[in-house]
Length: 256
Image (tube, rainbow, N blue to C red; front, side, top):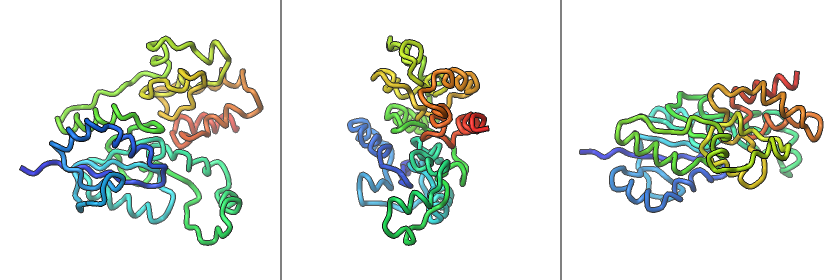
């Protein structure tokens, strides 16, 4: 019987989400007993051509070459999963979407004329159909493991549906928004990170993307009232998850 195959692909990103797969350590060794890791350059130079049972894609689409590449990956993948904030909402690269990409290039590079890039950084779903999205910067390794195991068992993955606020409550973390007046996206951001930022005394910045049904209008009103400088709330919505529709719409309303 042919074993299922797993491919892990990198686009424009920092490799942090791929490292989360490697950080599974003992678990990934167990997975290797039941699934063939056919393509994963972060782990090995040994590769096999598709088709693949499961393809995971890290990173956003920022070049014409990447547009063609993601279409090819979609064609050769039975299940395509985008992992991490870059792949699901543009990530750090998407900060160019609310700025002048050419200006950035001229500041950073001595010869920007040699660069080839798109004016915007876009999530994978802008170019191909995606079967599942796992958010986070980086993605949570427990969620990665749950999704892979669930797909191998032909069942629906069990993923958190609550907000980061719920994780703070469960951990007994003092609310930085209420107690300290620190801007925090926890009420509108999906759970999964373990509320790592509020636990360290800083506000959540929404890297796990908007929770389904997030009330961004109410959050905007609260954050606007405690702004430390004019336009802070709009800037926060335009952070690394700015291509997430709910956050993008909230930022647009504040701009208007």
